[in-house]
Amino acid sequence: MNASDVVETLTIAHWDGPVPAESQRRAEVGLEAGRVLLFPALAFHPAPDEHALLSPDALDNTRKNISLDPSTGRLGGTALSGAERDRLAAMMSRFAAAATGFLRALLPGYARHLEPARTSFRPTGIDDRPTSPRHDDRRLHVDAFPTRPLHGQRILRLFSNIAPDGAARHWRVGEPFADFAGAFIPRLRPALPGSAPLLAALGLTKGRRSAYDEVMLQLHDAAKRDENYQRRAPQVALELPAGTSWLVFTDLVLHAAVRGHTALEQTFHLPLAAMAEPERAPLRVLERLSGRAPV
Ligand SMILES: [Fe+2]
Image 1 (cartoon, rainbow, N blue to C red):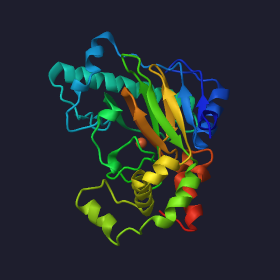
Image 2 (image 1 turned 90 degrees about the vertical axis):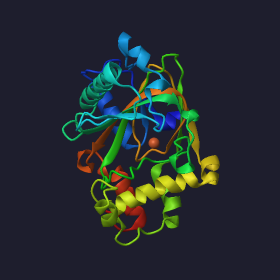
Image 3 (image 1 turned 135 degrees about the vertical axis):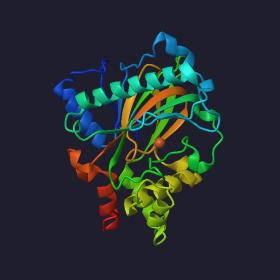
Image 4 (image 1 turned 90 degrees about the horizontal axis):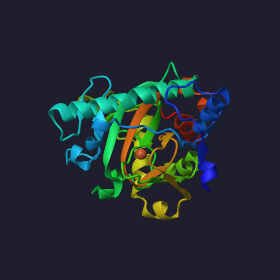
């Protein structure tokens, strides 16, 4: 494996489109095939009065990132208050709007179906975080949310490196999802009978976890806990310079965020039906591998 297997580079420099048809096509094909779309010229610029916010001091020490919930406008995980807090929320809202507009211009087939979810701001250095293996995003994993069942919907994430000192963000990207899942599925345990309604009733999950969510969470945990896999699995190092943005289906692409600080990220959910090739979705891959429907 080398970087050209896992990265598709697009030289778009504006958030507000229009995007040439050829770039739209490459974006959709590349994403669904499990490549990271890299936009080397797509920079998000904080306003001059926002530069002071780009500091680990913005973070509430118990959290690893600051998040903005678009449905409630609630900002969580910050130590800031008053005018500074409002300024941070405004910067994150502006990023969310830019990211959403950009994706609608880039991916017209997805545009009507994209559901913007949380916006996050990650002001600290990745390697500063004390974590258990399960919470250690420096280890290869696919994303799965313990508290937000998706029932097969996709997780699409746009990242921008806004490090004021110009530090690159370093990722590693792993092997194709089908190879990874095929090796790990025989090791997964069946969900406890009744655990999904119990978790939902206790308010621990937003709605019931499906068999798909259970399998994805187990894949996430199993990959991170397997030291041997982390060391030996095929993987490619990516350097993502300050001033660049990148877009990836993080439920499909094995990824590890190894080093770097000060990034913004916007999550989107996407129904399978909006994909050009839904059979490439993790849900369909898992169905083929297991010979039955995990939903
Ligand atoms: Fe992740």
